[in-house]
Image (cartoon, rainbow, N blue to C red; front, side, top):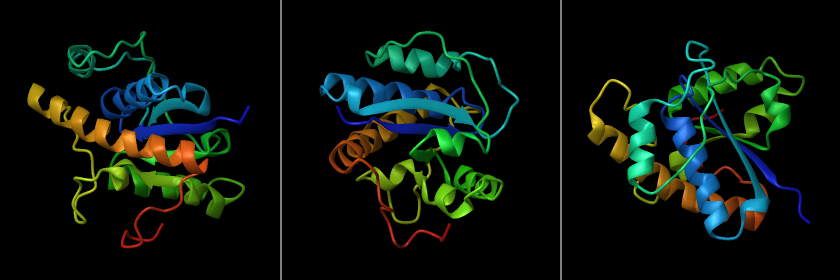
Length: 178
């Protein structure tokens, strides 16, 4: 059996976007018979929601789309997490920058930075100038629906890349350097 690719999604507080991406990628992998090929987790760059469940609006949006997930417990991403994951998927460019700064605190900063990608690098509908998954936290329910659509499109291609290649190379050469 192939060693699973360990993927972690990272957003701000680990209660909206990153747990949604965790649920979606795990469900897509299981539905396509590739569940054993990936291990999925999520975390936040900040610690203000550590221990909290997923935002109820995120959970409702997922459930309305047919996803089920047990209780979530938010956690914060730290330097040690780079060693525990093969791919660190940032939900927006701010998270990407924070993760790259955090990589400098690891034993091998360049290897850690090389693991960081933006989720919407895999979204066929993302523009070259906007590769962020918008933060729905302060908005209405429509924002959560749009976030789910962006995540579903992106995760489908991400899943294909990690199960085909085992690791994911940098997708876009026009992104700012890590």
